[in-house]
Image 1 (cartoon, one colour):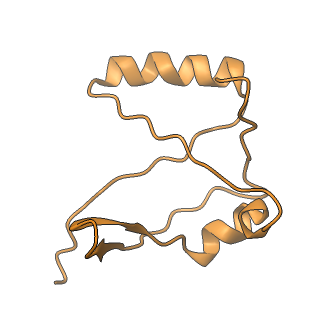
Image 2 (spheres, one colour):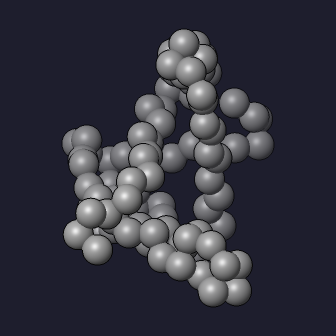
Length: 92
């Protein structure tokens, strides 16, 4: 992990939640992700205005690469990453 980043970790139990990605007309893309209350409850640092929060997204095309990365993340950061999937909502 980069030295300039301090990863935040959840405060309680693992959670599973679904949300929506919203369309942003100016970008002409589905690019706005609204964070659900369950996540905000787990990461109270997200509610603090005093320090900007960034994110790091990694995408591995192969499970072998992902497994190697998870081992390295476990060694270096000690904070489990958030698993995140995109899916098409069949209700629409």
